[in-house]
Length: 475
Ligand code: SF4
Image (cartoon, rainbow, N blue to C red):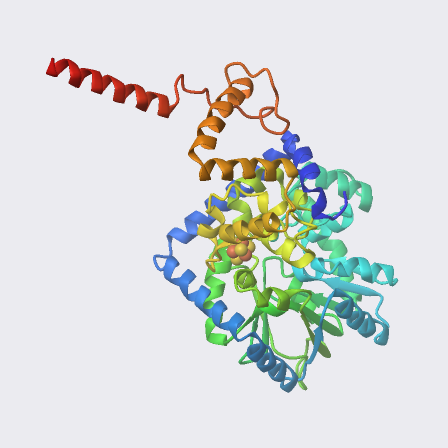
């Protein structure tokens, strides 16, 4: 499989016809939603928290330049280094430069969607480094040479049997599908990598502008080891991860764990403000913060789309989306899948490359309803569709049908004639007769049976009947 959103329809139809995959997605997403529901119910002020988080993000994104510069000056004052990367290449080159300087060979990475976005692991590999993903899900997909199928659960598409086979094949162990045994194997291998790695790379969940602190939220402890054991720690963050103040953090922590994994709080929350200070026993000698743009400032310019930068990557909109549940994460051909992926992938890669993604939605609004920072996701998808239509990127048949529809709406005679023709056409492809098949439509779904008479005919008949009755009464 290639990582390209251009092949959305091909990937989606293949995944829809894979019952095993659909069952895996259904189970995992429903399980996550049930857990979320339980812990959210314990917070009566949930809606107020969402509203508050939305406002904080709005402030941070509206004043992004100010807060990023404040963050930069605090990080430098605390002893760290800051690098502004315009794109993935600049970020990777900077990290490669560090790796060469310190003669690194092994690089331990904790889970980071931002480094997935720029394909950092592949770049490190191409430059004779050994990148090791240390989050279990990421480790699994690294062994399988795949990309994440979910923002928070990258190996969600894999059954434990498949993971057992993968471990047996790649790590030379005896096959087992017992989760505890598989975890033990991964733990043993990863421990030795933590001990030998010279460079640790992490993502950032939140960056606090007023203290110059980065916050990493996780469950396995691997991020803490990746950021403290190697000599050098590099954190890569999208520009949008900055929030104004330390006091804002608890609001996001309450929302994030509950929305992503259905936990009141994740097992580890690491707050990192500086490299190791004199007298401290552990921690890296150097701390670098890479601020990645990679298209974000372009999104910032678009008033209709800038809200997508509020995303805290919780994954809840994926879990609740009826399309994601059926087509799975890999169909999107991007590391960002689901509703938010369908919004930001076209923004990052261009609408012409990802023009099927905004249509990967029923527009039911479940994504917007569940989003902990109240991003109006489904209206953004609708807006992207408008851009696709305005730039004539829809199929000619659709454009032709819309022109006919418009003509009918403008003129009563055309409307009448059109509706008669439509009734004939629907009889040909409708449920009762269906001698014709419309590819992609009547192959998998039915038109409801047509009423015997149209509303207009019924109305006319009713009027005539009542006129006759009135005439008869007056005779
Ligand atoms: S858009 Fe909202 S629900 Fe979806 S991943 Fe981002 S924060 Fe979570």
